[in-house]
Image 1: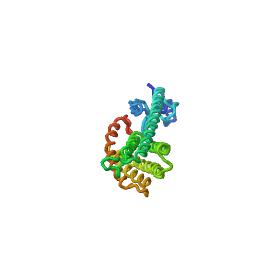
Image 2 (image 1 turned 60 degrees about the horizontal axis):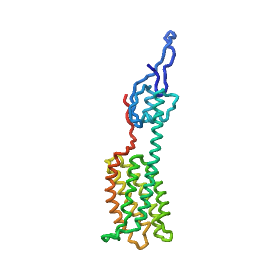
Image 3 (image 1 turned 90 degrees about the horizontal axis):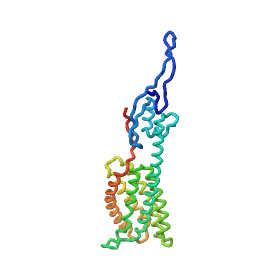
Image 4 (image 1 turned 180 degrees about the vertical axis):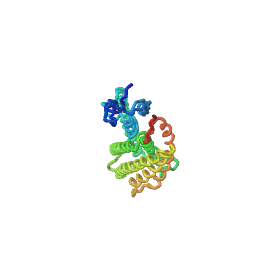
Length: 289
């Protein structure tokens, strides 16, 4: 039976046992090894290893066996643990590949939503006397908050912010290219107001969602979307239509009422997609000895 730590390579040392009469007797100093079961979140299985107390403390400090193996050098590992480390590296590379594809997909989708909303906001709904209080853009824009909240739930606050920045850049760029009439001042103001309102509202949405992520599942997306929609609506309409003769106050309240309704409706796809994403958790799993 091997008496060597599988994580640090700590092995028995040779030395002498010295008596009071200074008699030296050869002996071995064995490392204090324990059989420990670690849970790998990446490989999704238990890993049974023989480790020393110092290695156990190191893994505990890192938070998980996955984090420990990510940083440790190959030279100190046992042959079996080297194979596990290679599996973790391959899994992480695949995960990063999938994450980058999903990141780009969400970012492009975010940019498309911003472009559609900026275009549709120029057209009031001419039915049932709603032309003075409502535009078509109110129905498409709340989808942006759904994208941000799903990204925040799956990847955390930092990645969600990156998607917001990328979506902001792409949305403004597409808006300036496709739907901005540079001979019309209102069209230019719509582009500026859209970018400003989008960036401010989405970043506030990300912050609020992150603060409330441990509450009941609907608290974080609903609260962040309602506050973000309110800020976005009044920022956008005030920047775009103030002093133009357009009744922007009435339009903003009509727009906000629809956004609130759509935000409530967006809880349905959020709940359905919640089962398909994995929560980012900062809590570390305990080690079973």
